[in-house]
Amino acid sequence: MRVLYVSQNFMTPDDPGGIRHFAHVGFLASKGHDVTVLTADRFHRAGILQSPAENCEDSAHGYRIIRVQMPDLRPGIVGRVRNYLAFMSRAVAQGRRQRGRFDVVLASSPPLFAGVTGVLLASLKRARLVLEIRDLWPQSAIVLGFLRNRILILLSRRLEQWLYARAAEIVCLTEGIAEQVGERFSHKVHVVRNGVDREFIEQAFDAPCDDRRGPRTADLVATYAGSHGVNNALDDLVEAAKELRDEPVRFILIGEGSQTARLQDRCRQLNLANVSFVGAVARRSVPSWLHCADVLLWPVYMKPGDPELMKLKRGAVPNKLFDYLAVGKPVVTSVPEDGEAAELLRTYGTPHFVHADGHGFAECLRTLAKKRSLGVNAEGAKEFRTTYDRTVQAQALADVLEGAQEPLSERLSLM
Image 1 (cartoon, rainbow, N blue to C red):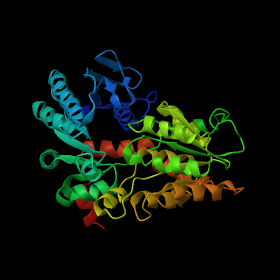
Image 2 (image 1 turned 90 degrees about the horizontal axis):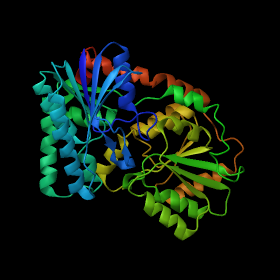
Image 3 (image 1 turned 60 degrees about the vertical axis):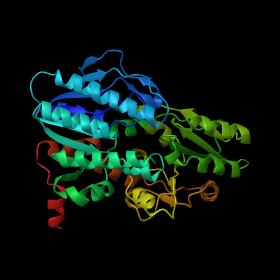
Image 4 (image 1 turned 90 degrees about the vertical axis):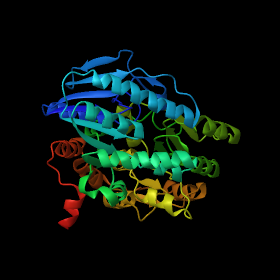
């Protein structure tokens, strides 16, 4: 099977960020499929220029990468849309130059314009289009207040439905996303979750922790790993650190984002010596940071009076949760207790659900700091690593591409 994999961001284990695409493409190539990746030459959120060359062969994993050269990202929504359109136009131009036809074009969204790229290339190459939905856009942007212009909202909603209608199959990362997409398109919806990088996780168990815990070894080390955006509610952790400034709790924040500089300024203003900003780290090293922590933190941006936002949060299962559960450490979180992520936490982990504010996190961490045993769930983590191994999820994706997995509507009819 000849596959064209379209994603504006394609990260490797040496880059910060998720490596879902890297793992899936490598798996497909290992099974004998001819895979070409069409992606951008830089990942703007971390400012990484991924490759100075446009095209390259990945000899280690058996697929070809085409990196289209992108302009510098301008600030604001206009700058982002310009960036998305630039990738779409340049990726279509590169894709149509590829000789012969493809059997499948797999396009990963967001951004929605990557889906448009998939539609155009599937038509040009006479291929079947499989659309992957990693997040509900524009719904997420609207609910979080990033997208407010009524005309843009209308146009983006119509674009979203147009993409769904033209896809032969739709792959969703969570049951919550699948439920919302499946309201009209359940006959072509599939769920392929994120996965666990078992190699990196198991290597982390033998890693030294001297440089992963801060200067005072007696502290309870509470670590967050992920994006630093508005949606990540990291102000709750800063407020918790303020409340616990004279207690034996150290906060370690891994990652970068639009809020990093502001959060660092806030910590300096408060003179918080118990917060460390590590910055973005290579994907392969994240598990060692998590393994060396005592507890893991997952604050969630919440508005209990906003039903649309709460619905979105109940169906969200971010990649960080897979990393957290795979290492088996207790997780302190403000995620809704009746959501999909909370069910995974109860099944495989040791969750501590708190109120979505700094005081809620501080109270829980204060209690945990006094305990001798924190309830590490080694057996649950082992089962989670087996169930959600990357190769298991990659095989599920391969089944969709090969037409061997039943869509949501067929599975529901058998229940």
